[in-house]
Length: 291
Ligand SMILES: Cc1cc2nc3c(=O)[nH]c(=O)nc-3n(C[C@H](O)[C@H](O)[C@H](O)COP(=O)(O)OP(=O)(O)OC[C@H]3O[C@@H](n4cnc5c(N)ncnc54)[C@H](O)[C@@H]3O)c2cc1C
Image: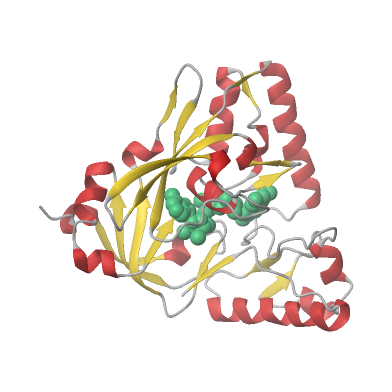
């Protein structure tokens, strides 16, 4: 059986779908609707041997201009479902944060208000251990269900066995996150809605809106704010041009659409150098740059 006709997109233009509106093409992108698709695709040795990149909602990813020549995977179908069970929710990796947060509100489930303001997918969240307002995805997770491409099998790992850290979640090579099993916390719908609105208001006041960006460029070093380190290290020229830092939040940049990914990378390196020269601190990227 082949997946070529139904599922394959060649030269997938990441710039069209990414939040940065920039980035190179993915040579072979397979849309995966269910576990059978996965199993068929990864029974092929030629596919197994290539490097793997799983596309989430591309809100934290930039693909270099030369493009990604390996195998791209885009989960859809079964992986967009949310199932409520007695003591947990089974959430597909392709479910978007904002959708999931609104779903939880509708069901009177609290604890997921923070996801209302993150533009990623559950798979991307679990990979990154995404978080804001003092909450992280790891605090809500019971376990991660993933596919291992080497042995063509599905596994489940309890969160207690995983070493999630600040912006570092489930990052195991050659695996695809399929589902997260999440806790159910019963809450009051009015309170849930109030919190979602509060979080949205804070974001509207502290971050640039409706611009091409990737959220925070850098992770905060321990006990430091990346934006403060950046602001105190750069000059006005960094706030001008087709890629520029945001005046509202110096750890965000805004870029013109279709600007070269390599120039974004260079811009980021220049900021890193300024901060290193001034504070002797090497900022670590939160943005994933793929080549
Ligand atoms: C305006 C804006 C605000 C943001 N605010 C926040 C914030 O407050 N907090 C925060 O933590 N982040 C924030 N981000 C960053 C981003 O939304 C998160 O990192 C999010 O978790 C990324 O999800 P995604 O689906 O877009 O992942 P992508 O960007 O598509 O991918 C990110 C990484 O996850 C991997 N990945 C995605 N899905 C899977 C899967 N199913 N299996 C295996 N690997 C996978 C990708 O291969 C890639 O390496 C913000 C971004 C923007 C643009």
